[in-house]
Amino acid sequence: MHIRVNLPHHPYDLVIEKGNLTKAGQWVAGLWQPQKIAIITDSQVHQLYTEPVKTSLEEAGFEVFVFVFPEGESSKNLAVTQDAYECLVQHGMTRSDGIIALGGGVVGDLAGFVAATYMRGIHFLQIPTSLTAQVDSSIGGKTGVNTPFAKNMVGCFYQPDGVLIDPLTLQTLGKRELIEGMGEVIKYGLIDDVELWEELQEMDGSTDSILEHAESLIYRSCQVKRKLVVADELDNGLRLHLNFGHTIGHAIEAIAGYGQVMHGEAVAIGMVQISRVAEKKGLMSAGLTDQIIAMCSKFGLPTDYEPWETEQLYTALTRDKKARGKTIKTILVPQLGQAAINQISLEEMKEYLEK
Image (cartoon, rainbow, N blue to C red; front, side, top):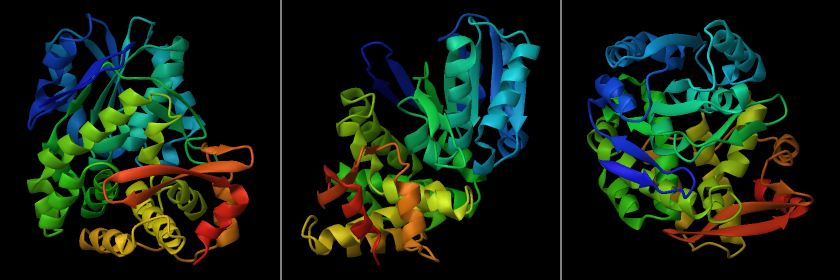
């Protein structure tokens, strides 16, 4: 399956096919001239997938080296970014060379930021191996790293030249890591795709059912992401719909300590919390919050966080990139399959954090 992300200045394809990881060299050769390639990955993915990808690239005529950093959200920072720059310099990388991100969302975000900023930008490809990365973070060009102040505070938009998605990699994810990705999949059904929501309703919630439906879930999610990215690449309008659950979710990630609550888990909690309050305000359909809770619970996602420290969450939330002056844009789902931007004051945002 191919999906064309038809951006006017930088179109590229998402290629979704079981077993295509071992064909990475052939895929890259169709996109890039012979050059040096840095595979950037984490310690967990490195053990599983670096060797077959590296071998495939070398057989296609590329000179390849690998930069590996410790697995986890806590590694997505400026110190690891600096280590990556040093590695690229040591291997003589130039502006005609490229980086491949091999891994989950943390790898893709960090590698993309390195590619965007090294020598003001070098070639970049994504090979996502987690469900969250395959349905969301590898598409659309958002790159960045965390700071002690906020998630993804330092970053930029930098589109890849292509995204290679192999659903078979999901079989090597831990149970929690696989389930975490369903937070984003559920979001896509809620904001834009009623048929995806119906498919999720038909599933029994087991990890086996996720793997069985993986190609369909990835394809439908990517179609929603593609549509919103093409309509609003720089995140000023419609693309903000993708942030349903994220404003509160990012705040939860920050106060919990990066990696303690996984991204998809935080999104699930954020969707439930903002919906609960919005429904009380009459801004969302009655009963939709209960449907969201039921869907998240079925797949094993959390729907609450303890201890819920309202002031701490509010402080973290005010540093969110969606804040503009004394207002913030939040996303609501007035009815299933339709999202809407809700611009409110930061003061009113406190109401959405109340239990």
